[in-house]
Length: 161
Image 1 (cartoon, rainbow, N blue to C red):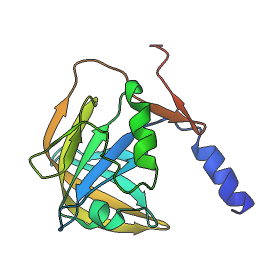
Image 2: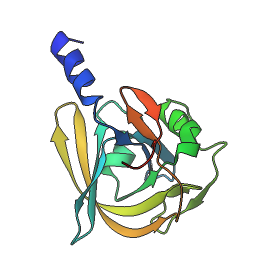
Image 3: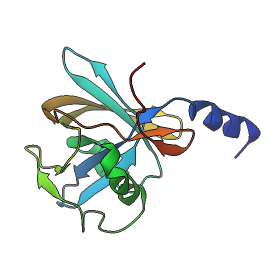
Image 4: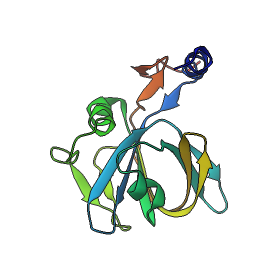
């Protein structure tokens, strides 16, 4: 990594981000999941979201090129799920509680929010792909706090200002 790339990563690590797991299923029925922190809303009307995924990520084609995906917004109680889906294991879902969403993707139990999406477009973005999806179904919890990443570490919300 060059000095500029290191500085860029350090600068961006000063931006707190929520942690999500994107799930998708390939045409053969194999499920994939990957931890991301590059997720945001794009449009209210129509309801669109986007996430970014590295081009070398395992399950890239299912997550970025399939017809559907789900975004699972993790709570501070789900740090273990972030770790599981960040690894390159064969069956990440082996010990994970989930249901199957209406779009065929896995919905992780206990998340703060879930968004079931139809992929609208995928764009090139350097060493990542930018995936845009239309939100078709959503659910959210009445309580709970998000899992955050800040300065390369997991964090929790400390309170209101």
